[in-house]
Image (cartoon, rainbow, N blue to C red; front, side, top):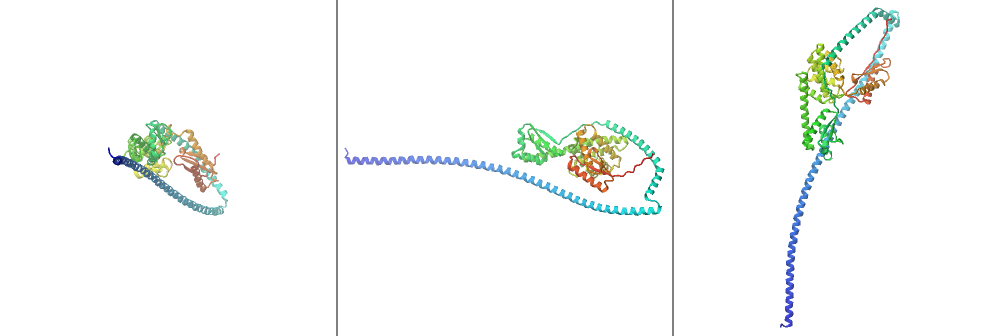
Amino acid sequence: MLPQSLYFVVIGLVLILGLLLGYFARQILANQQLRRTQNEAKRLLEEATAAHEQMLQRAREEAVKVRAAAETDSRERRFELQRLERRFAQREEKLERKLDALERRERGLANREREIEAVKAQLEEVRSKQLQRLELISGMSSDEAKQELFRALDDEIREEASRRVRDWEVRIKSEIDEKARDILSTTIQRCATDVVSETTVSVVPLPSDEMKGRLIGREGRNIRALEQATGVDLIIDDTPEAVTISSFDPLRREVARVALNALILDGHIHPARIEEVVEKASNEVETTIRNEGERATREVGVIGLHPELIRLIGKLKFRSSYGQNVLTHSLEVAYFAGMLAAEIGADVTQAKRAGLLHDIGKAVDHEVEGPHALIGADLVRQWDKSAEIAQAIAEHHGEATTTSALGFIVATADAISGSRLGARRESLEQYLKRIEALENVANSFPGVEKAFAIQAGREVRILVKPEQVDDLTAMRLARDIVKKIEDTLEYPGQIKVTVLRETRAVDYAK
């Protein structure tokens, strides 16, 4: 047996060895655990880095989208502001021109009044001196001289002149009425036309109500881009599978309709695409305008027209007056004018040419101020170089004095086409109310004896009492009536106000 001291030494060595083995074992386990922890940390770091890169990429993409949307919206707002600035500048310039014209007119009228007063005073002075001189020479008063002169004239001419005038009036009126009835009845019987009625809105069908949201776009940018590019109002309401296009300009409305149909078929709707499609639709409508103008000239047999006039004729397809299509109306007038010319022995070709072009001013009357008849006459003088046809166009609504047979033919054909049953949409009740309103406005002024609304409400003729209204007051009265009509009534086109003042001397032979 080992001695006890050696036994303790051995035990101590064993314990020390066990401790060393345990320590090294723990170190080995700790190193393994550390390596596993480092590997796990490295893996987590790599995953976090990848996730961070993905998040950064998505953030960059979203930032690009937001920036593009902001730039598009900013550009649209900038375009809108520029358009409004131009519009306000144009209106301000127009108002300034009108104010300058009014001021010049007021100064001219004031000078005219002073000149008239001076001339009146001079005339009154001369008249008084002449009367005194005549009374001195003749030994008769002015009243006695007048009575003697009237008696002499009455004895010589009253009976013969009155009898002959009455006979001629009866005979000529009978012959003219009979001939006019024959010509008009023959002309109307030879023409059969369609009834065309248009409104100021167009309805575009949709394949589904989902398309409405795509047309509106994010925050309404698509519908704003379409309205800005076409100049119309798009009405998207609860009407199922339909969009309404509203505009008083039928040409813009047609461009918007064609563009909207193309966008619906294509399915790709965004501002850039909208601008491209609207430009293409404008080209298509322009092609349609030229084709319609050439078709119209071929139908009536009018050749040799300037291309610009043919284009303006084609634009009339998208213009209506009281619901009557102006191109169809112009073709009717051309046919009627040719028939009337054939009946009375006038130039049929010239009559058709003037009839087809008589409303050409309506193609640009929203761009040029003034009556469409005078605008059309200026266009024909510019492009057709025909003074006779231009004069006939200017005469067909009374804006110019009617002096030519061609002017009478065009005016008559225009009246036949516009007054036939079903030609215009305005009801008889509405027409009578509009005429009555015009006459009531004129009759509301003092000094007015009678007022007549003529030419389908395009003109008001006013007879005044000469003892209450002098020439200068008549001019002021016309201006005041025009202002009241503009302030109180709604009407298409222009209304001509004519004030008539006359003094009549009436006597009877017994």
